[in-house]
Picture 1: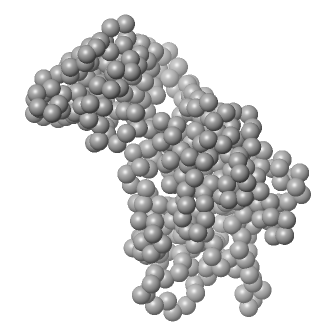
Picture 2: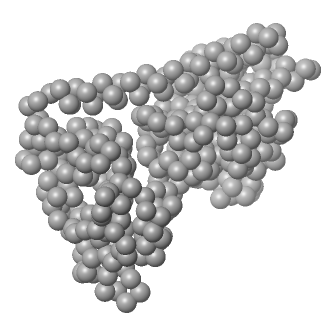
Picture 3: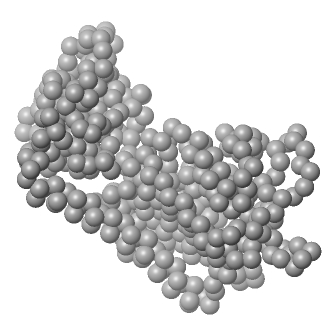
Length: 405
């Protein structure tokens, strides 16, 4: 599928096969027969709305590709030509993914442009005087001075933000309901890992597939366990409105785990990371908590990468990691990589009772730079907990030793 395949791996034949499926132009898809400055309007409109895919070299009829598709005459510097059109016509500029797909004889080509949903809207064209949005079959121009459409766009984004926040609130409410039924509560180190499309606006999948199909397809192994963690304990997720969830409580230790997926692309993981003992002063010490944060973050990122690959989503993502109830908790340092001398076991008592880390990332960043993203997140979390000495190289070596790179 052209929407999620690595842009550098899309071929001339891939485009032909995509067009042979007769996908109709829609809010996320546009065909163009030739490359000219008019593509700027479509790029800006898609960025202003929900992102999309533009294929240049395809003549359309009744909004479908006219077969057989032939592409355009191949010339050098087609990619640079697209970038020049963007930089010369769109403000603020947009940086889409661009792939020039050449035929075997290098005489014909398709240009595939994958436009991300932007969080810097509105993007204007024509000397910064007109703003366009994307509709199902065409671009609808509005003068920049006419604020109704821009306000509508802003309002639509606000509604998406409200929808996303509602997802998190519902997940928390379900978690609290289940804890109440079981008579349990996370007393310390309540950890939440969450991710969702930045501006959710439509269902990405039939929610019935979230019951078992998707959880099994995104299953990830590493660090001696399986993620999602619930799959280690039960055969399948349980259905809830427009999604599925898993909830587990250990009768002896009262360890609590909750996970949820919905058809808009939310993945919500919550658990008690407590593996505690007391030090000589009687303080609670979490012997492996920083290690647990490293492993959970790693597995979480790999799992959600598989999730969005299955859902066909390639836009911007809102990533959230938070830790609650950190009162009177001492964290132990990460173990030293093999071959490195560790002179003591450093403990740190966070001054904050609540820590939250948020990042806006792209699917491309998650796919191509997951390890860099992981190292940055773990380093940022470590700093917030009180371990300023932890370096990226230490984290990378631990990942290498455990077969995660």
